[in-house]
Image 1 (tube, helix red, strand yellow):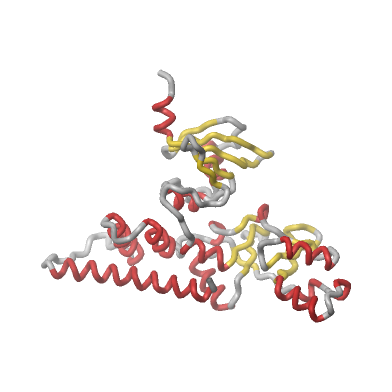
Image 2 (tube, rainbow, N blue to C red):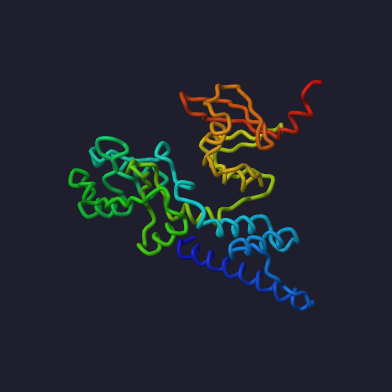
Length: 304
């Protein structure tokens, strides 16, 4: 689906939320119920969120639609750092490589845009689009030696990691761009964010309430969930209808480190937020795999 179509879907969702709110008010008024302001008065966002929650409880909105509407309302609260691809997981290409090697990297990548670095992987000097590269190759009769990837690449666009998703979405649409690099307050590279990342935060598909359909998440036969440490907390919450807090950490590994105030060893287990977290694998100072199961289940099966 084209990005323009996805943006149209977002606009439709906003309209549906507004209509649902108006319908609720008029329905109450039709039965002679007087609507009074409650102090402190709810914001428009909180009122819309309450309407969506009511419709979901009453069966008027399925979980997937509730999640999408909720994500849409959260855009002004989330920052690009919450959805970005971290620099450790970024795919990039050395700009000093031979053009043939660069083309090979692009063809092997599932992405159409690839950051180019020079000297160090966090020194991004350009962004190469696969179509631009192939078009340039065609112009020189597929002679790799005549390609200068830096002339084909576009200038990188850097955005602060504190930019809200609402602001970044508007910036993407205003600039007609799809790709930005995220930096911290010191200008150090943090990761990258795309227009598709923000769209997927709103309309991402969830196959079923009980099925896990998130990359890096696997449901075991015993009912436990095995999660890569880099999986975002928000993605896991949406997929499993959990309520793990994401105000102090973005990833599951970050949550474990924050709660334990340490970098746990393998096989260490902790209980918090109603879940039992077992560290399965650690790579140096990174927690790479965690098993999660309900804390109540552990308590019930423990020997007495």
